[in-house]
Structures are given as C-alpha cells and as structure tokens.
Image 1 (cartoon, helix red, strand yellow):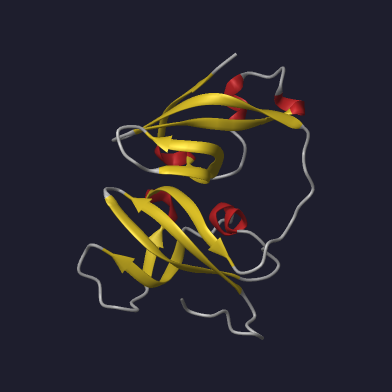
Image 2 (spheres, rainbow, N blue to C red):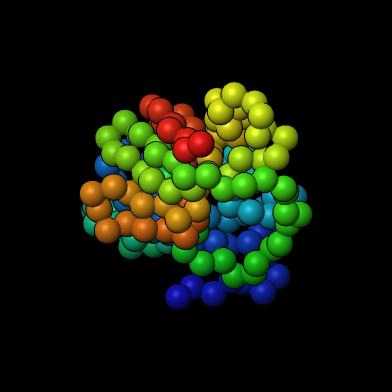
Length: 162
C-alpha cells in the first residue's frame, strides 16, 4: 500500500467509485482547507483526479485519471490515513430507496432536525452535489458499504420512509 508522505500538503484517501458502468479504486488528494472527501466532492470544481488507479479496464499501472464529478454515481472511502471528526448535527437516519439511471441503492439517509418538517425534496435540493448514505446496498450486487456518497446529479428518484 502506498504511504502518505509525512509532510505532504494534502491528505491521501483511498476510494472506490462508480462512474457510469465502470468501477475504479484509487487515491484522491484532499487539500486544505478541505478535510474530507465529501468536501472535495461538493466543491464547485467539476473535475477531480484519481491517482494510482486500479481498474479492470486497460489503464496503465499507476495511471492518473481526471474524472467529471457530475458523471460519478457513488464514492466509498476505502481507507483514510487520518480520521477527522466533525461536529455532529442533530437529526435522524431514515430508510431510503435511491433510484439511479441504471441501478438502485437502498440504505439510510440523514435528515437534519431543521428539515424534519419540510418537504422531503429539501434533502436533495441543498447545495451539496452528493448525498451521504449509511448502510448502502447496490441492489442486485454484492456491493455493501457502511457509508457512501451518492451523486445527486445521477438520482432519478428518492423514496424516503415515514
């Protein structure tokens, strides 16, 4: 496993991501002031770089890919070199079915307390480009993730329980 450079100006994070029908594993570099992969995903830049890419497709070993974030279906953090803890917001996780263009994800989405009595579309109409999902399962596959970030640009519909 590649090591995090001791004095690197960034945090190196291994991720698994789905882009259209392709799956990739590689590293993203999270530069300050961002501290999380979700910060990188939700920033205004349309593209991101994936380094040291592993794929079943014909990509040169240790290649880097520049990816259009709008075409990424979901991202799962495989490992982080340093955990960063953030303020916990009040709210609750609710069961949800997320219908994407070519597949469905079942899991739990977080509904902040201040959105509890609002229309459920408020969960997707925030400025974030990715929706955080806990205990996500890609239906019809063996893919299961404790946490994953799902692109709101790729969501066709969201069914929220309750």
